[in-house]
Image 1 (cartoon, rainbow, N blue to C red):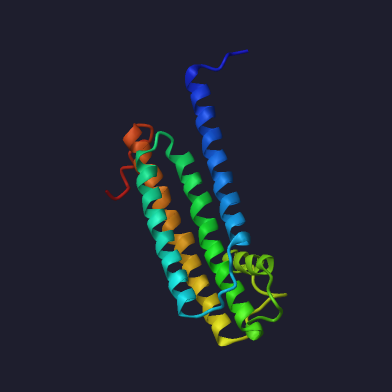
Image 2: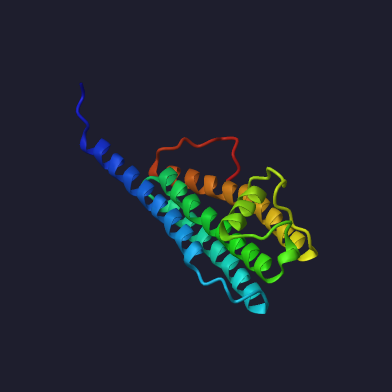
Length: 184
Protein backbone atom coordinates (compact mmCIF):
# COMPACT_ATOMS: atom_id res chain seq x y z
CA UNK A 1 0.00 0.00 0.00
CA UNK A 2 1.39 3.40 -1.00
CA UNK A 3 1.83 6.08 1.60
CA UNK A 4 0.40 9.49 0.98
CA UNK A 5 3.04 12.01 0.11
CA UNK A 6 3.24 15.62 1.33
CA UNK A 7 1.35 16.79 -1.77
CA UNK A 8 -1.52 14.38 -1.09
CA UNK A 9 -1.76 15.45 2.55
CA UNK A 10 -1.70 19.09 1.50
CA UNK A 11 -4.52 18.52 -0.99
CA UNK A 12 -6.59 16.71 1.62
CA UNK A 13 -6.05 19.53 4.11
CA UNK A 14 -7.06 22.06 1.45
CA UNK A 15 -10.18 20.02 0.65
CA UNK A 16 -11.07 19.78 4.33
CA UNK A 17 -10.53 23.53 4.79
CA UNK A 18 -12.69 24.47 1.81
CA UNK A 19 -15.46 22.08 2.86
CA UNK A 20 -15.34 23.34 6.45
CA UNK A 21 -15.57 26.97 5.32
CA UNK A 22 -18.44 26.07 2.97
CA UNK A 23 -20.40 24.35 5.73
CA UNK A 24 -19.63 27.23 8.10
CA UNK A 25 -20.89 29.79 5.56
CA UNK A 26 -24.16 27.96 4.99
CA UNK A 27 -24.63 27.45 8.74
CA UNK A 28 -23.85 31.08 9.58
CA UNK A 29 -26.13 32.51 6.90
CA UNK A 30 -28.98 30.19 7.91
CA UNK A 31 -28.53 31.06 11.59
CA UNK A 32 -28.47 34.79 10.81
CA UNK A 33 -31.68 34.41 8.81
CA UNK A 34 -33.46 32.77 11.73
CA UNK A 35 -32.01 35.18 14.31
CA UNK A 36 -32.37 38.44 12.36
CA UNK A 37 -34.92 40.85 13.80
CA UNK A 38 -37.41 40.78 10.92
CA UNK A 39 -40.12 42.76 12.66
CA UNK A 40 -39.74 46.15 11.01
CA UNK A 41 -42.43 45.53 8.45
CA UNK A 42 -42.03 46.22 4.77
CA UNK A 43 -41.45 49.65 3.34
CA UNK A 44 -38.81 51.82 1.71
CA UNK A 45 -36.19 50.65 4.22
CA UNK A 46 -36.91 47.03 3.32
CA UNK A 47 -36.57 47.73 -0.39
CA UNK A 48 -33.29 49.60 0.19
CA UNK A 49 -31.97 46.77 2.40
CA UNK A 50 -32.99 44.21 -0.25
CA UNK A 51 -31.27 46.14 -3.06
CA UNK A 52 -28.16 46.62 -0.90
CA UNK A 53 -28.22 42.89 -0.18
CA UNK A 54 -28.29 42.15 -3.91
CA UNK A 55 -25.41 44.60 -4.42
CA UNK A 56 -23.53 42.79 -1.63
CA UNK A 57 -24.25 39.51 -3.43
CA UNK A 58 -22.81 40.95 -6.67
CA UNK A 59 -19.76 42.34 -4.90
CA UNK A 60 -19.15 39.07 -3.07
CA UNK A 61 -19.46 37.12 -6.32
CA UNK A 62 -16.98 39.44 -8.07
CA UNK A 63 -14.48 39.05 -5.22
CA UNK A 64 -14.95 35.30 -5.26
CA UNK A 65 -14.25 35.20 -9.01
CA UNK A 66 -10.99 37.07 -8.50
CA UNK A 67 -10.06 34.71 -5.67
CA UNK A 68 -10.80 31.66 -7.83
CA UNK A 69 -8.47 32.82 -10.59
CA UNK A 70 -5.60 33.14 -8.11
CA UNK A 71 -6.37 30.12 -5.92
CA UNK A 72 -4.06 27.17 -5.55
CA UNK A 73 -7.10 24.90 -5.97
CA UNK A 74 -9.53 26.86 -8.20
CA UNK A 75 -12.23 24.17 -8.28
CA UNK A 76 -12.37 23.97 -4.50
CA UNK A 77 -12.45 27.77 -4.27
CA UNK A 78 -15.38 27.81 -6.73
CA UNK A 79 -17.31 25.33 -4.59
CA UNK A 80 -16.69 27.55 -1.59
CA UNK A 81 -17.86 30.60 -3.58
CA UNK A 82 -21.12 28.88 -4.52
CA UNK A 83 -21.61 27.72 -0.92
CA UNK A 84 -21.42 31.34 0.20
CA UNK A 85 -23.13 33.22 -2.60
CA UNK A 86 -26.18 31.02 -3.24
CA UNK A 87 -27.30 30.82 0.41
CA UNK A 88 -26.87 34.61 0.73
CA UNK A 89 -29.01 35.07 -2.38
CA UNK A 90 -31.70 32.70 -1.06
CA UNK A 91 -31.73 34.25 2.42
CA UNK A 92 -32.21 37.73 0.93
CA UNK A 93 -35.32 36.61 -0.91
CA UNK A 94 -36.57 34.53 2.04
CA UNK A 95 -36.36 37.48 4.40
CA UNK A 96 -38.18 39.68 1.91
CA UNK A 97 -40.95 37.10 1.38
CA UNK A 98 -41.26 36.71 5.14
CA UNK A 99 -41.56 40.48 5.64
CA UNK A 100 -44.09 40.78 2.82
CA UNK A 101 -46.21 37.94 4.21
CA UNK A 102 -46.02 39.38 7.71
CA UNK A 103 -46.93 42.90 6.57
CA UNK A 104 -49.54 41.87 4.01
CA UNK A 105 -50.89 38.44 5.02
CA UNK A 106 -52.99 38.16 1.85
CA UNK A 107 -49.81 38.16 -0.28
CA UNK A 108 -49.57 34.36 -0.13
CA UNK A 109 -52.04 31.52 -0.04
CA UNK A 110 -51.15 30.89 3.60
CA UNK A 111 -49.23 32.64 6.38
CA UNK A 112 -45.46 32.23 6.07
CA UNK A 113 -43.12 31.38 8.90
CA UNK A 114 -39.41 31.87 8.25
CA UNK A 115 -39.15 28.23 7.29
CA UNK A 116 -42.12 28.56 4.93
CA UNK A 117 -40.52 31.64 3.33
CA UNK A 118 -37.24 29.76 2.90
CA UNK A 119 -39.11 26.78 1.44
CA UNK A 120 -40.94 29.06 -1.00
CA UNK A 121 -37.67 30.73 -2.00
CA UNK A 122 -35.97 27.41 -2.70
CA UNK A 123 -39.07 26.25 -4.61
CA UNK A 124 -38.82 29.28 -6.88
CA UNK A 125 -35.02 28.90 -7.20
CA UNK A 126 -35.28 25.22 -8.10
CA UNK A 127 -38.11 25.99 -10.56
CA UNK A 128 -40.15 23.06 -9.30
CA UNK A 129 -43.30 25.16 -9.43
CA UNK A 130 -45.90 26.11 -6.91
CA UNK A 131 -48.43 23.97 -5.17
CA UNK A 132 -48.93 24.55 -1.51
CA UNK A 133 -47.68 28.14 -1.22
CA UNK A 134 -48.43 30.62 -3.98
CA UNK A 135 -48.26 34.40 -4.22
CA UNK A 136 -51.79 35.84 -4.38
CA UNK A 137 -51.18 39.58 -4.68
CA UNK A 138 -49.43 41.73 -7.23
CA UNK A 139 -46.61 42.48 -4.80
CA UNK A 140 -46.05 38.79 -4.07
CA UNK A 141 -46.10 37.89 -7.74
CA UNK A 142 -43.81 40.79 -8.63
CA UNK A 143 -41.28 39.71 -6.01
CA UNK A 144 -41.46 36.08 -7.21
CA UNK A 145 -40.92 37.31 -10.77
CA UNK A 146 -37.89 39.34 -9.72
CA UNK A 147 -36.51 36.26 -8.01
CA UNK A 148 -37.12 34.09 -11.09
CA UNK A 149 -35.26 36.56 -13.29
CA UNK A 150 -32.45 36.85 -10.78
CA UNK A 151 -32.33 33.03 -10.56
CA UNK A 152 -31.71 32.87 -14.29
CA UNK A 153 -28.84 35.31 -13.87
CA UNK A 154 -27.38 33.41 -10.93
CA UNK A 155 -27.68 30.00 -12.56
CA UNK A 156 -26.70 31.08 -16.06
CA UNK A 157 -24.34 34.01 -15.96
CA UNK A 158 -22.74 33.58 -12.55
CA UNK A 159 -22.20 29.84 -13.05
CA UNK A 160 -20.58 30.49 -16.45
CA UNK A 161 -18.35 33.17 -14.96
CA UNK A 162 -17.37 30.92 -12.03
CA UNK A 163 -16.48 28.08 -14.40
CA UNK A 164 -14.50 30.54 -16.52
CA UNK A 165 -12.63 31.69 -13.42
CA UNK A 166 -11.79 28.07 -12.61
CA UNK A 167 -10.41 27.65 -16.14
CA UNK A 168 -8.31 30.80 -15.77
CA UNK A 169 -7.03 29.63 -12.40
CA UNK A 170 -6.13 26.21 -13.76
CA UNK A 171 -4.31 27.77 -16.71
CA UNK A 172 -2.46 30.11 -14.38
CA UNK A 173 -1.29 27.06 -12.44
CA UNK A 174 -0.40 25.31 -15.68
CA UNK A 175 -2.75 22.37 -15.01
CA UNK A 176 -5.32 22.96 -17.74
CA UNK A 177 -4.59 22.45 -21.40
CA UNK A 178 -5.38 25.29 -23.77
CA UNK A 179 -8.46 24.66 -25.91
CA UNK A 180 -7.61 25.89 -29.43
CA UNK A 181 -11.30 26.32 -30.29
CA UNK A 182 -11.93 28.55 -27.32
CA UNK A 183 -12.13 32.31 -27.64
CA UNK A 184 -9.44 34.34 -25.82
